[in-house]
Picture (tube, rainbow, N blue to C red):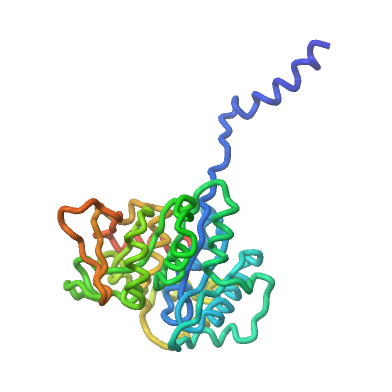
Length: 307
């Protein structure tokens, strides 16, 4: 009798004896993207779906024909096997070049939600107990709309990780700061976000403008011949340019591996033209990435998307 009484206790302590650890908790994220114009958004979404550390709660689309962008995001998720992640479109704006969205013309899926992106974000954040990370890799229109719609929602946001801005580096090899596209597309929205008090992790051109995916690395990705990489190949051909710069994937990668960039707390101000400047003598409102090693980034990225 004593033997059977001790048996359950033995099985309870057995994982401890073996040194078993509980599985790591996944990072809940929401991704806001202008996928369909430049190609780097698709590469960023590929990194998200190939990173098991993430719990992707939804995707929202911003700028231009947001519904066409939503179809594209939903189809890419579908091809990657993530067929339950909801996708919601933001308010449409002026027409923009979006050749990649032709790939998803007519695509239908239960993933596509009819509610507005800001409402969708609000609903997802509200029903969760723990805080969620927002990753914004397009203009900040949807994020600002969310903060305007529900000012108290920031209590539910762990941080806003964004690709945008320029502190001491422009596009390519330009060492002069510029009005970076995502910020300059909606400076008012960016001002709202940077003044919100929500913690911000910022990946500006300083750590993204040099991330060119050259031919050997493109070949490595495109010859994986998985449904996901085949989709990236098609979108790359529709993009109809030569060498992608992986601006947006860096914002995603920084959440997974903060050591990829050297960061500094700065007081970032956004002017009416979309310039992001570090103000002196003011409390910081963002942790800003200022230096990176491109080879370390590509080693990290390719091991995930093209192992």
